Length: 427
Image (cartoon, rainbow, N blue to C red; front, side, top):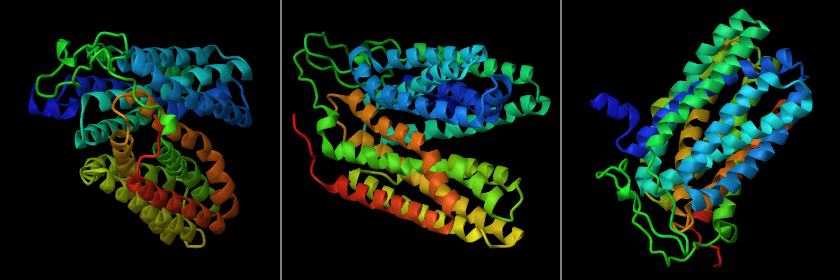
C-alpha cells in the first residue's frame, strides 16, 4: 500500500474499513440530498407537509435506534450492529420505490433514519474500542473529511437525475443510492470481531486474536470474564447533560441546510444561486480544517474550551446572517460569505470538542451505551433543527437570530462548565 493510499484509507484495519464504507455511504447520501425531496413529492405524490411530518416521525425513530444500538453494540458487537444497520438502510432506500401512501412512506422512513442512527452509534463505539486518547478524535476527523468530500461528489452525481427531471430518473437515482449503501457493507467484513467488552459469564476475546487486527494499533485489552458491567450512562448526569447540550449545538447544521437557504432567498437581496456557493464554501472549509481543529483538542478541559469557543462563532454567524437582510445584493453576498466562514469554524470546533468529550467522559466498561447516549443527542438536534430554525430566525428575523445565538452560547458555555465538574453518577 502506498503512502497516498494509507492517507486515504487510514493506518489500521478498523480505520480502513470504516473509511471505505463511509465513502460509499456518503456518495449515496449526496445523491439523496439532491433527489429525495423531489422523489417523495413527484414520484410518490406526497405533499411537502406530509413529507415533513413523516421525516419528523422518522427522526424520533432515529433517536430510539441511536440509543438502543448502543446497548446492543455492547452485547453482540458494534461491527455486527453496523453491518445490520447498513443492510437495513440499503433495503429501506430501495423500498421507497414501492411506497404508495403516507403510511408506507413514514414506515420506510423510520427504518431508513433509524438505521442511520444505529450506524452512527456503532461507528462511534468502534472508535471508542479500538483507539485511545486524541487518536479517537483524529480518526473521527479524518472520517468526517471523507464524509464531506464524498457527499459533495454524490450531490454532483445527482445533477444527472435533476437535469433529466423525470420520475424514472429519480427512481434510478434512489436505486443507485440503495446500491451504494449496500456496497458500503462490503468493507465492514474486514472489521475485527472482538469489538465489545466482555460481559459477565462470557469468555473474553482479545482483539489481537483477530486476523484483521493491526499490530501497530491493537484493539482494547481483553477483559476478564468476571469483569463488572460498566455504569449506566443514564445515571451519569454530567454525560447526559453534555449529550443534551450537544443536541442543541447540532441545530447549527439545520442553520446551514434549512435556515440559510430560506433566509437568503426570502429575506436578502442576494441571488438564489448564492445558496449553492455558500454550501460549497462550507464543504471545502470543513474538509480543510476539520483535522487541524481536532489537533487542538488534547484533553477534556481543552475539549470543553473548544466547544465554548465554537458557540461564540455561532453567535457571530447568527449576527452576520441577520445583518445581511437589509443590504444591497453585493454587500449581502459578502456578509453571507463571512457568516458561512464563521459557521464553518463553529462546526469544526464544536464537533472536535464534542467528540472528545463523548469518548473521554464515557465509562470504558460500557462504551456502546455511552456512545448511544451521545448519538441520541445528535439525533434529537437533527430532528428538531428544522422547526427550531424556521420558527425563530426565518419567522422573526433579527430577534429570532438573536434568540438562536443566545441558545448556542448558553449551550457552549454550559458544556465547558460541565466538562470541568465531577462525574455526576451512581453505580
